[in-house]
Length: 168
Image (cartoon, rainbow, N blue to C red; front, side, top):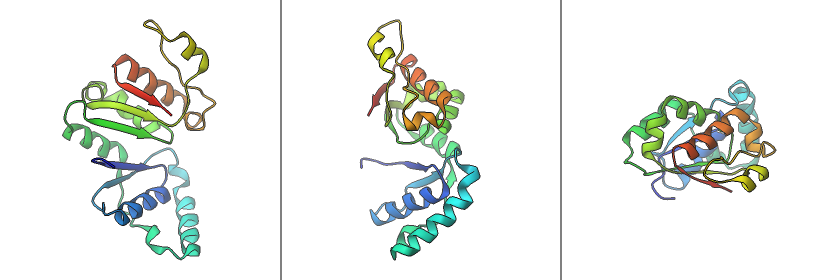
């Protein structure tokens, strides 16, 4: 990993796993945030996670519960970044990032080198892609189903602001 700055988990449990994994990788100072999409399920996720980890015997995976607000952490990383230096990688819903972009379009355009999303592009929009049309998300992709309007906003803003998009 090159110059990792921030990890945002989709629940407290996943954030704890990320924090513990980073510690094992020798990167304990990387900030870990909790996203908003599963906020209502965090308590249940966390209890299930702790039980499952305990069952494995790998207690280091429990990590610590020091997590930050993902929106504030993202803003701070963007403010500190050099122009066109950030590569944003997503294998989850885009709700929090869409909210960040809506409030910080200029900062997003200035500092983002590329956005990498594990999802899919709508085939019809891909076939019509050109100077006067935009690629659209394939709403059948699991990560886009979480928040379809966020997926559409992120993809459209990347294209409008000429930020490279890589869809895996």
